[in-house]
Amino acid sequence: MAGLNRFIIDVSHHHGTIDWEAVKSAGVEGAIIRCGYGMDQTDQDDKQWKRNADECTRLGIPFGAYLYSYADSTAKAHSEAQHALRLLAGYKLSYPVYYDLEEAGTESGAEERARIFCEAVKAAGYMPGVYANKNWWDNYLSGLTEYTRWVARYNSDLGMEADMWQYTSGGSVAGITGRVDLNHCYRDFPAEIGTESTEQSTPQLAQVNYRAKVNTPSGVNVRSGAGESYGKITAIANGTEITITKELNGWGYAQEYGGWVSLQYTQKLRSASYMVGQDYTLLDNMNVRTGPGTNYARKSHSQLTAGGQAADPDKNGSLQKGTRVTCQEVKQVGADIWMRIPSGWIAAVSKGKVYIA
Image 1 (cartoon, helix red, strand yellow):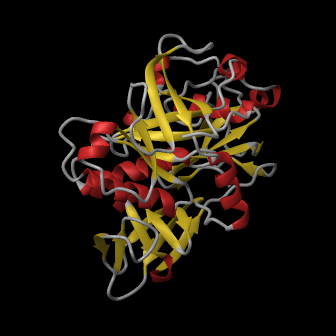
Image 2 (cartoon, rainbow, N blue to C red):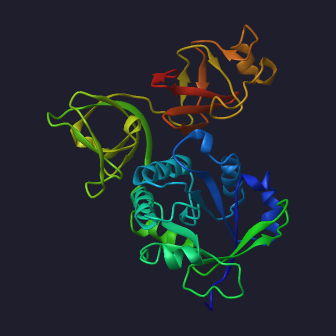
Image 3 (cartoon, one colour):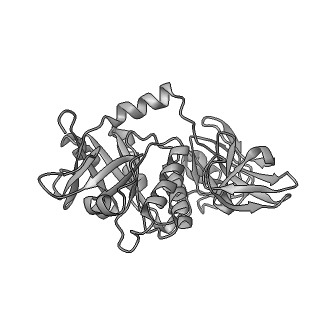
């Protein structure tokens, strides 16, 4: 494997709070960051994913992502794919999205589940890949040749073809406490992915939030990906209302059903969309938080800007109904939409209810 050989690390919340500036100064050329593990549940999001991805974005460190799989059924593989896509929304990746296959007891059927995950990732506009050790590749994944391969083997010789080789779990890198996985990367993913996004017009996944109604007598099928070639998960009866949280190539992701429907068979009912730099009005008294989600701490009155304090006459950190706010950033969190304003983060749409217009 002569030629290109980039120094790549892979990390997760187990590495704690990483000093990414020190990592960059140490000569690391890219990172594969764990976004989560298992099915699409917020308590299975990697606790350091957002910070790690934000820091790499800020510092210009090329990065990709991986999701650790516990799936032992195709349904769980579908859910794991949606888990990864939910967390990836809004980030520009320079490396693939990998499906991490190593959990004991999930060997049987691994190839089929890997294809489900990878095809969903591919349909969303990302480059998919699979991570496994050499034993898994030799015995359980030998027929999986259509996706980029990341192989773990702690040996002086990889012994097989791969685009990336995890050659040790005992590495040391400035800015990271404890041992870290080190990798040789033999493929110029940043150049390839950059070319694909500009020259091939890769379909873009749009984050949305609106209600729609199935509007065809025969109902509509829910599929595992955005297209008729994907497997059917279930069907939704005519007249049923659904929440669409993502759009891709004329298909919408039905949040309640965990899959995609063709939007030509639905009628849009109402929506909430926001633009950075625009002013909006609070439709209710709103708590201000330190980040986009109810898991972040509420801000106190003293932590608000001067304008925020003026809109908080009760001095409890809650902005009054009718307050005008300027949108600085919008973040999709599951089916909810959060908006960053000068004083912090507030819920624009939560549980289907619109709080900012």
